[in-house]
Length: 161
Image 1 (spheres, rainbow, N blue to C red):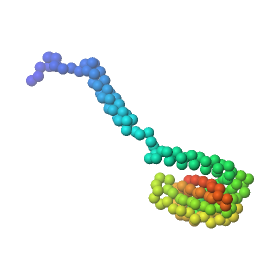
Image 2: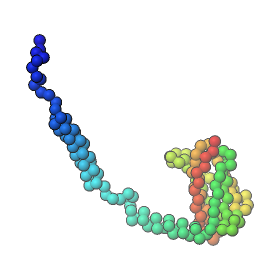
Image 3: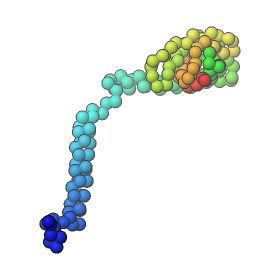
Image 4: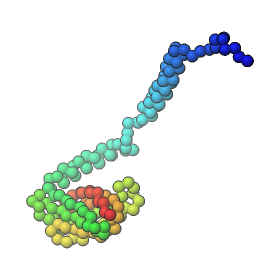
């Protein structure tokens, strides 16, 4: 039988709890410092595989956007039910722009699976219509080229029942 009148050999005191607390969080901090250091040393600073070429392309993109802004065109892309897409392109005074060559794609917002090309038919007064099965959410990306080589790009999210 044990004698309850003798004091235990070891008792946990406040300083023991303090030391355990400091050691535990010190270990956590040390591991975090190691991970941050390794991540920092291995990061090349490049987000793109070819940053110089990406920078040149971005400069070209900015120039195209500036030229598009000077055109003064605007576009409306809408789903008509769940069977077709309507595109209306107007100039700076609201008149429909006709005679455009359209390159259009429908893509799912979260994946590249199911992407498809759209074939628009001109309906006059800047209105173009394409047949498409539109169940769910789609991103419509349209690049219009005018008869004089002017380019206009528009992108809209379409949601059909």
